[in-house]
Length: 162
Image (cartoon, rainbow, N blue to C red; front, side, top):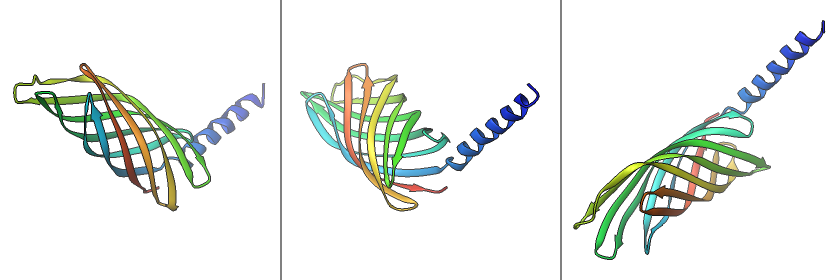
């Protein structure tokens, strides 16, 4: 037991140094296509995040998911989200998922009813590091709302500061 406290201290230092070594700060943007019910439109968004452990991070972002015409109803949809981002690097390829909550605003036009609230969002993606600090890739996001789901397929670019 004499060496137990030293082993514990070394293990904690190792875990904290691994987390610090992989604690990157990143920011990026995405453009693509969203679909809601039977309509599709263009979308864009941006995100910022940081790694808290070698395989998991936290991320927040904004999405302008577009204007949708669903029958006679018209909607403008936007969302702000925060969540966790598990990931793994395979050489220059970065695979990730997203799981979190989002605050959405579905603004109705032409007689359509407004809707806003909180719900779940998730996504997956892949990025390729073209240089050490810049990655490009593609992703899929799903935003759940009370009237259905908004799906988006995007191309993205991310700048990694650390």
